[in-house]
Figure 1 (cartoon, helix red, strand yellow):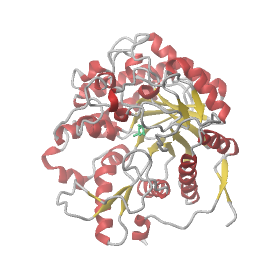
Figure 2 (cartoon, helix red, strand yellow; figure 1 turned 90 degrees about the vertical axis):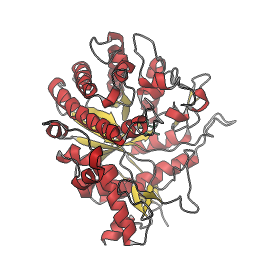
Figure 3 (cartoon, protein in one colour; figure 1 turned 90 degrees about the horizontal axis):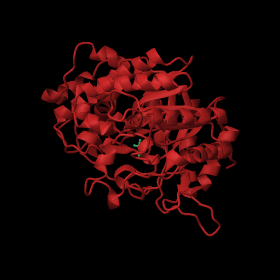
Length: 470
Ligand code: FCB
């Protein structure tokens, strides 16, 4: 079949994403206070091979080179996060001028190069001083977050056009406070975990208010980045679709409904029984702020089946299908139709709102420069292209998608996996800190410059949700 052209809307953002702890290093330089990740990395067994983000990619030193690289590739946007303990070492009180100045330099250089800054205020590195006072189990942390947002907005709110309060709050609550596989590594009761969720949502609302109050840039967009589970009913039986639908309510609407409608989903609230969070008067109104955009991170799907589970909060996951292709992340199946499915489902359920894919990408841990000095990563090019084709199809069906950020700009500290996972479109040698753009970086740069690409047409393949609805 002849190739088809996939063109994207005018002003589409083409970028790459990172987060502070995963790339900056300089963990205790220039007045930065410790974060929960600095602490967690010292816990024996928490991180593979005992690695830490103390140096990471040394982006704190190499930031200029990293921005120039994106510019040279042809990207037009960069998603990064501000480290809270770098700009407020204890999470409260006096600002750390050197920390703020770093982000100011970074943003000014982005603007000079024509890279649109997309700033995330919280990508998991809570100041340790706040964790010592209870972390996200404490309502005071939400209040401290509001002050921190105001502080950053006063400094950068005249020039940063895109702000997200949180990255993946679901990971903060469940990986941080339930399973404990991420910082702060706590294993709390379901009620406490739900309280953490509530405090994160409240902090989002308070943060949005602070941003709107303090930032002066006209047309500034403020929102949040979520990682909705891309729920995929095993095809065939209506009970599987029902199980999938139930789990959409539990995993996704538990976040989306308070954010967009100002209330928790009623039936899920009922299923939670005595484990529901304490909600104070006015909280739900605070949480529901008008979002200028919703950021979506997606990598793989969750196959749900109707099985033995009697608890509506606990789904039955189907095993990986036979012949599934995976990335180097254990169990992360490559299944590009997730892109169309998630974009369409969010739009269908919540109405048309500006969406960005704020993270999408693949880890292939074998990536390394070859004898020709280049890093050939055809599997990552396939991953990016296939997902983008499905994004294109979502656009054609009316989804308001405004941009795409590959995770990640460069290989970096992949949380509990340390440096073994390589998600970058740019290779990093962690001995020399040398950066080498992989073939996928050149590919994505060309797509950005041309605002589209050519590829084989997609096969028809509606999601089982779509099929189920007829
Ligand atoms: C997301 C995180 C990001 C990175 C990717 C692989 O959940 O937001 O920091 O770890 O996964």
